Length: 397
Image (cartoon, rainbow, N blue to C red; front, side):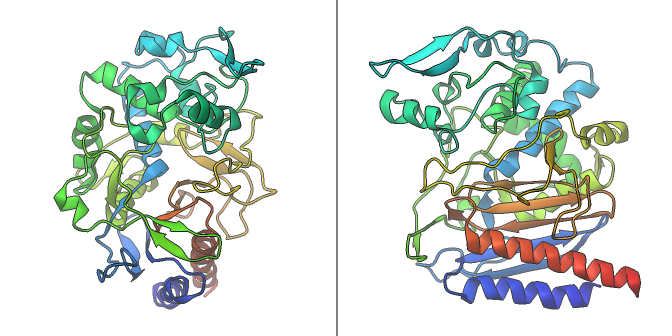
C-alpha cells in the first residue's frame, strides 16, 4: 500500500502548492500504530522567503491543541483529582462569576443574567458550557468590536472572561471551553499548562518540539501564516501568538511539528501507550473515544469574521458527535474514514484524523487564514481519500 499511496500523496501535495489558487506550503503525514508510513512536504514556509517547507517545519497548531489539553484533563480524572461533574468553579472560581448574554439593549449594552446551573468540566470538554468564539458568533464579535472584549489570541485572563451564550449544558457551541480546561488543570496541579504537558504527555510520547512559548529555535523553522485574498492570491502575515503568554491557552496556544503530533495520534491508536511510557489507561481511551453528547450533534461553524473563517463543516449532511475531546463522525465519511473515527482541525487550516478501528491516523498542516480554505481543505480531503483508497486496495489484494 505504501508505495501506491506515496505516489498519490506526493502528487496531491505538489498539486496544492503549484495550482492557482495554491497553498504556500504543506506538510502531511500518516501513521500506523508503530511509525509514520508517509511523510511529505511541499512548497515554501513563507512565500516571500526562500526556505522550503520541510517535515521538521514548526506550525502554530491552533485548535489541534485542544485534544492535548483534553488528555491532561483525563489524566487527572484517572487519578481521582478531578470530578468532571463537579462545578468547575470549585477549581477555577472566576468561571462561576460569568453570566449569560441575552442580546443587547437599545443603548447597545449587553443584557446579562445569571445562568440556570453551574458549568462543569464535562461541559467544557464537550463544548456545551456556553462559550463561543468571536469569529463563529455574532454576539461575541459585537462584544469585541463595541466593548473591547479581547480575542483569545491575546492569551490573557480578560480574554477568557466572556459571557455565556446559553445556559450551561443546553447545546453544543464551539468555543473557548478548552482554554478553561487548561485553567482547571493548572489549578489542580499547581503548575503552568506547558509544564504539565512536558512532564505528563510530551516526555512519555517522545515529543520534543511542542511549546506554548515560541523562541528562536521554534521560530527558525516556523511556517508563516498567510492571508487568502478575495482574488485567491496569498499575502504573508507577520502573525505570531504571544511569545510569553500570560496564560497557556489550552484551546489553541501550542506550536509544534507534524511529526510530534503524530506521536500524540499514535498514543490514541495504542490505547494510551506512548513510546516512552503510558499516558492514559486503555479503559480511559475506550471511554473517551465514544460520543459523549447524547442526541446533540455538531453544527456547521458560521464564518462571522471573513478574514478568520469561512462557513465550515466536515462532511456536510453526515451526523457528527463529540467525544473527549474530538469530533466523531457517526457514519462512514465520503473519504472512507469509518464511522466512529476521531478528528478535528486548527484555524490556519490544519486537519487530522484518528482511525482506531483500522489503526491509522493522519495530519495535514498549512498556515492559511481564513479557516475552511477551499484549496487546503480540499487538498486534505483528497489526501485522506487517497489513503483510504489505497488501504481498501491493499486489503483486497
